[in-house]
Length: 296
Image 1 (cartoon, rainbow, N blue to C red):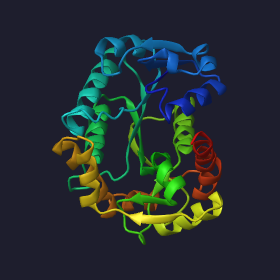
Image 2: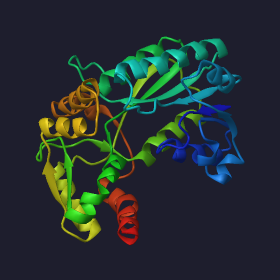
Image 3: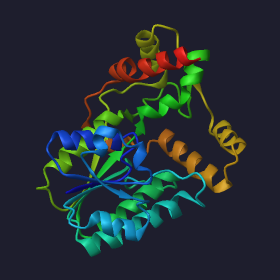
C-alpha cells in the first residue's frame, strides 16, 4: 500500500494515476474527497482529513509500505518553519508508530546552504525530522516549479510579460511537475532502496529568464518579455495582500537565496527530467493561455 498526501495538488493529481497505472494499491489523505477525479476516487482508498492530524495519519499509515509526503502551503501560518515542523513532527511520530518503511518527500534543492533561505530552510528542517525516523527516505530536491508561472497567466495574456525576482541574464533552474510525479512514481513502485538520500531533480534546460521569454514567444506565437522584479518590489506585493512580516521574510529570503546560487551545487549533479521548457510551454502553458483567452 502506497499513501499519497495532497492527492489533488499539482504533483499528487499526476502521481496517483501514475501509481494506479503501475498496478499499485493507493490510499490518499484528502480533506475534500469530492475534489478527487471520479475515476481516481473509485480506485483508491480514501482517508478524510488533514495530514497534520495524528489520528488521520495513524489511520492512513496503517499497513503502508511507502509514503509520498508533501507539505501544503499555508500563508496564514506564523512562519514557514513552524508550519513545516508541525506537519513533519506529526508525520514522524506516526511513521514510527505504524512502521512505514519508505518515504518520498518533496523538498528543495540546496541542502547545506548556510544562509537563511525562508521556505527552503523550512523544507530542509522537515527533511531532518523525517530522516530521523530511520525509515528509508528519498528527498526529491527541487528548484522552481514551472507550473508556478501559471499564476501569471493574466499578465502573459494581457501584457505579454512575466516576472521573476531573478536576474535576466542568470540561468534559472526549474522543473516541470510532470517530471516530479514521474520520479516519485518510479521510487514508490520499486521499494528496494535503503537509507536516506537527497535526490536533486532539475529540468534539462539552462535558460536565463530572457531566454525563457524568447522560447515563450516562439511557442505561444506572440511577443513575451521578461520583466525583472526586485526583492523590494516582491516584498511590497506580498505585504499588499495582507501577509505578515514573517511571511514576507520567508518568501524574500527564498528568492534571495535562489538569486545567490542556492541551487548551483545540486544543479551540477542533478538527475534530469524529460520536459524541456519549450515542450512545457507547448503542452501546458499554451493550452491554459488559450483557455483563459476564451473565458475572457
